[in-house]
Length: 287
Image (cartoon, rainbow, N blue to C red; front, side, top):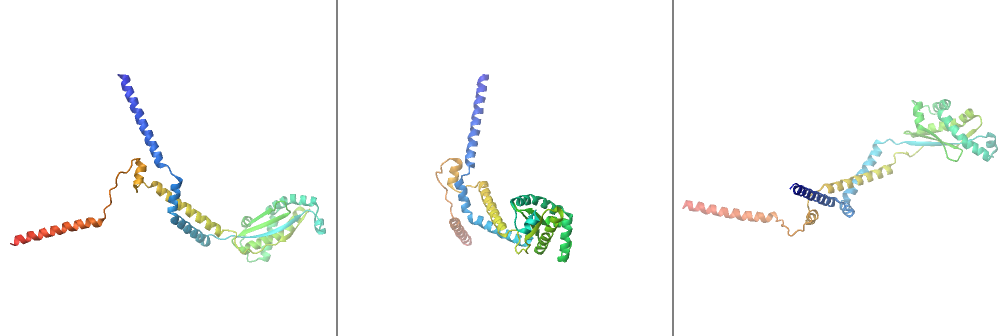
């Protein structure tokens, strides 16, 4: 008897497990997302998706124009050499070139960390640009970037500022100071300026085209995500095909949706008959 009860319990457990697995597989089938259906949904809402992209693009342009301060850059370039005699004679050997390339890194460190060079730069600004005031050493260090061009004997000084005239003035001061500082600090080389600082006309950042493109892409992706999320969360049954897909049961018949006007006609008929009956009853009472 015990074994019979145990067998019945195990049989029920297996049946319930099979039913759960069957329901889980059915739910998985219902939750499958087909790529053609996703594309169809996106294509059906293409106007809204593009409209969102255009709105975000315009918003990015407005924010860039009104709320982001443009940054300008002025650059000066200096040619560095290690043999002043060869430079004056106009002939430079391969050994001079190799030595000059190795010499550039030392010049970068000297110009970046030299207090004397910073004093010379402030003196140059005070003498030639007296209107530039309240410029600190930390601000100067943040503005300036000195680096060597790969496989050359060239040092470039790039100065970034929200004021284009300030950027040109500081780059010009560095171009004037670097040759003198290299000679003073190294005593073995020299430098000549071959590209002087110019007044920048266009800002280097922010990029209006880049920000507009990013805003357009963000709008498209965001709206497409909203469309797909609404579609996945929508459990409403719209057509007979939805019923067959969810239940695997064929639709035999549909109940038509009668228009409201037909109901109004029947109601009007009943109201007319009630009115006639009421009038006949009142006529009989009078008699």
